[in-house]
Image (cartoon, rainbow over all chains, first blue to last red; front, side, top):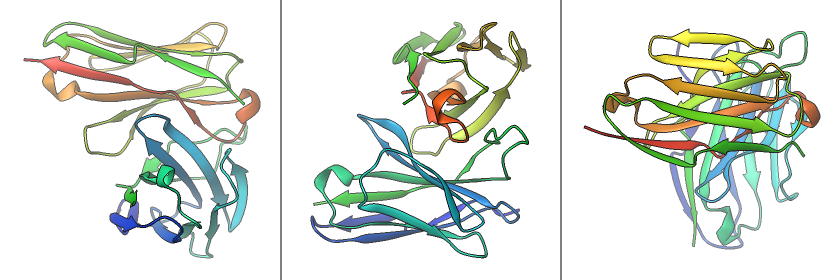
Length: 117
Length: 112
């Protein structure tokens, strides 16, 4: 099975611009989560989608949004970019949660390295 | 939100020495997962612990879940240079039910 793929792998933007990142989960995985990774804040949860619905959301401003398509592919968008948005954005897919609503093993993609100048 | 503390932040060891990283939560956990991220790579799942007092082993790696389900540890016996990377714990449960909260990670350096 192919792993999680993310495009683009690298991106350079300037402040005020917006950006869209794409993630294709492992075939059969319907849950897609997004994380922001920075040296200072570590891995921070952005949001999680399942069957085109956002089920969980982290503590990020409304400039960060996402969506999921019927084929489980997901995109995240960041509007009005700020310098502090420079980070590695990781997408992870998994099978649905356990019956106790616990997250299953997350399969991470290689990430998109976003640099905001 | 859910608080998680992972210590130490950094650990330097000589090849062959043991290594342990600890993860502590302010709330009772439903489960805990451990991930490893190699330099320049992405996190890779290692294991999931669910039961109180659970101990699981993977070759030289031993994972433990505390009796009160508020802490966990990862122990590596006789480290090798291939063990280099950042080890993260990820928590589910408490106020973050249904999503994972990652610890800050422990960066392991192994000197040959």
